[in-house]
Image (cartoon, rainbow over all chains, first blue to last red; front, side, top):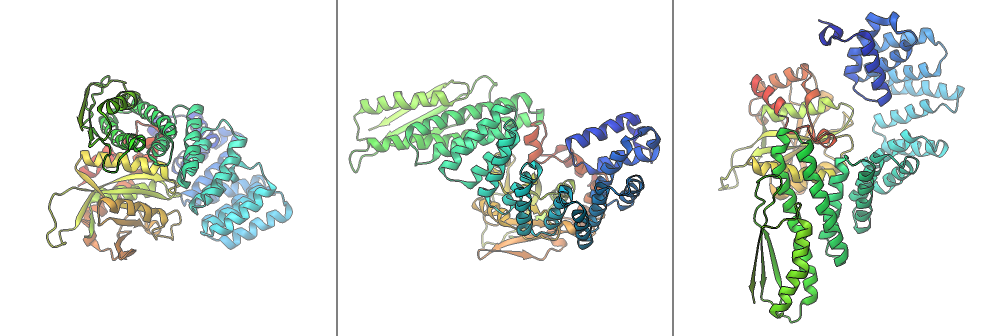
Length: 379
Length: 204
């Protein structure tokens, strides 16, 4: 079988640099690391100098991920020869035992490390990982909490704990962990966005508002974060659609949702591939389908205040006929509003439409254009 | 009505599971929409022609799931499909019971399609040769999800599915599989996976 360097015409330096990049980014592309690393160590070991030891470690862990025990053992033996008393290498021995599912032996191994060095965080975290691998989530959570009482600054641990809580559907505590992470990493848009997702999942009006705010914050930190954009749209739409909010809050949230929808459409136009662009029109239709629901609720609630007599009621039926899929610059909306069995004088209904309905529609459509507008008043 | 899996649906499910062996993965199963009205409640099995891989890692968060369901629903309407099922592979290889997330999503799907099924992938038995089907199909009976015996009847053509899945796993096609998470990371990634669909067709 041809070697990687022959197949892809890369030299050993490029392979070494690739491995370094993967190490720095903490990627878990274990199969690729094994492919590249195995060739590097077998063919070019002499050229790597002192880099070889960290590469052995990286390749060994990747090999464990791919069930390549042969390769893992080779790397481990080289490391043991070079660093006979190292705790770091002992941890790798433990990881190999974990990979072979010999958890009791692995635990004994880590306990031995901790006896010699009680502050060894790596060994403690491996023990917690064993609990997670065995499916013992409650114990893992408990141990991790104890660990974090001592090592409050360990961000990897806080993130792991938030994941464990999310899997247990304990969203309140997961939010707490993410709050810790956001405090120490205020510029990290991913933590903001994940926090917002947790709040959204928790549900309830307060949490939805908080979610919307943190999605917006994530977007401010990184305006290409699509999850934050979608999240902003969803949370604003849900708030606007809720019957319990005031008219002003509803109006504001419709504005936010409309803005988010426009940004989403733009993102697909600009960055979507040819195939996703053909889906773009269906996305606008999907967004419009939810938009019409949002809009419907808006019209209903202010009219409740106008309700005077028992039999008279204003029934607003808003119909979005179809978004015509024409050029990217024009959006045709054909809107039909029927006001039926209205007990208000005609002038009041028209005033309502002109002062409330039309401005909201104008603010709402992505391109700000309304091409056709038809109002039927049946009084 | 029992669901049946085509080679393409089964293959993509397994590729998704293989791509993220250390994570939980999930996705939706779609079938072609037929206009036949059921006369006595018994019609032929529902054929899942395709699957859409959704997420990997943390599955229990709502917002992106809702976005995915809305967008995929629209895509289905355009292509005359209907979402008929949900698949999931748990993080723990030894655990293949549908959890809360699976049940919630399936309940949502059941609102549009009464016979929605949950397909759990048993990743402990995932091998390159795929000599046996490794899915558990759960149907909703009397408010509980009951597992059904999976035989080769659950597949449109088991030997073809086996051959294609095995070939694509060996060829590491899962590296090119795009799920909805990948799409959200980069909009150019196409979650309908046209290249993989083509590979499946070529092998048929």
